[in-house]
Length: 112
Length: 115
Picture 1 (cartoon, chains in turn purple, blue):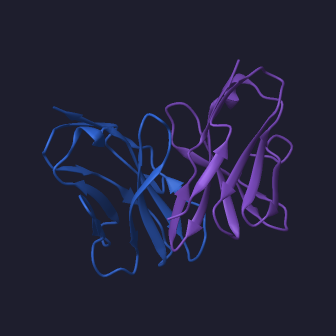
Picture 2 (cartoon, rainbow over the protein chains, first blue to last red):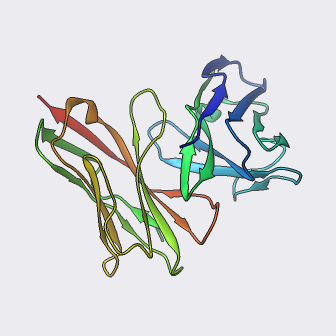
């Protein structure tokens, strides 16, 4: 398996502010994935982060709203910018290892 | 079209009974992988079981088994001898192609185990 940690585990933020979520993996991986899970919904991929290149965003997600950094092969950050209540979700990072995708514990974000 | 369909929004089962959670998928890629995850109320996604499209046998992991019927494009999760701790959301997901690729998720099934 993979050991993945995320910070913060949860946060309550005011609208218009930004939050940066960190994801740390126990060993080097080429690709890291960021997903969003809105309340009562399934998971949706936001973007794929490769080390050394720009992240690839899914339809409906843009870099200005969800900038991603990938400074090395074990770490990535996702920023949720200019937040609104609609951004209240669980944000999860994941990595692929031996044909299996493992998830971090998630960041539960509430925007007031 | 939905790539992953879970038709059971909720399931209620008596403790110690077996339960089957349904999942059908849609892909034209001959190489794909199917996953099941458990999500308790804490929100973490716990990997349960994986089935590759070329695997000859159904995957098993402890009390979990995957009933893979390729021609019918179904990948149902079977939990034997259910326990109270099995109560959670269960998601079926698919990865298309080889290597590290994104997952596409179904809408999930909320399983409740009654004592």
